[in-house]
Image 1 (spheres, rainbow, N blue to C red):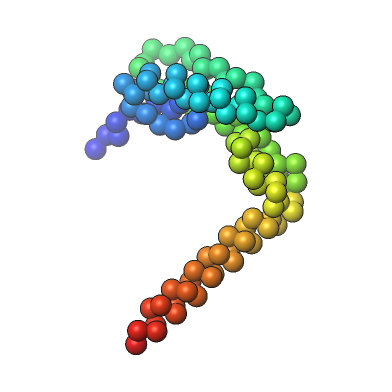
Image 2 (tube, rainbow, N blue to C red):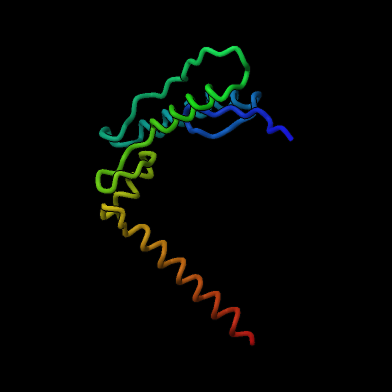
Length: 128
């Protein structure tokens, strides 16, 4: 079975059908502008531009690669660990990042998962 042709949004990197992408992109850019304007000045980015790819086909791998790379260029690296995030997520990440791949974020997530496992064990096995 052949996969339907999807196009990648150059702003957010998500896939859309060939009819939907023309509706999505203007709305996505409007949302991007609003969110970018709300960021601290040092985290604001240059507005993404739609990549121009000279192709003969209607839906090509080259177009999608260029759009994906454009979306990835919007990510900002953490000054501590180097991982990349959207600016609003970077602010949250930096609140708990210790750098060097060891973050309080990941350990707190691990602790939360372990806590849930223990709670489920208590619930499941207390019935028997």
